[in-house]
Image: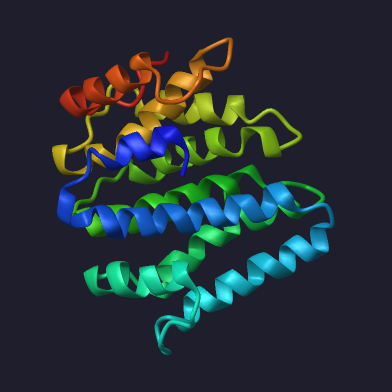
Length: 211
């Protein structure tokens, strides 16, 4: 888990942290498959295995795979389905295609936020856009084209919107992503400035003030 995500996890209610961590570790696993792939076909097969394994959680016991077992133990009892988790995979699958579909990348992030918002028991009509921004920032180095214009368009859509308090432990990840898209130079993770941005978001609920 990245330093930012480890710090973000501390903002979630303690009873939910095992479940949220299991989902974030799944997302990290899918990202690692893409990052480690030198032959797109092999990477596509590996991602498909994960998608099918996640879908099977709805009808079969979890196999002896620690990440799937953690999802079955901590996440599925809280109203999340394997099918919902499997939707995250498609956002990574398109990264291995000759022409990356940036919309699908964003939808993968929306699916991730949808799952975690289910754990939190909250909802917001703008949540998908926040998830898309977070995902675009996460895969920025894996996409040959510049995803910043798409991210900035989403940020404009979110300008001034305040997410509910219940969802802010999640949407603070989008706040960090927006911060990254507004910076000229990369910023190390888990710095005091990023920790302050998280706390600021917990108070304001605002992801973006971009014009």
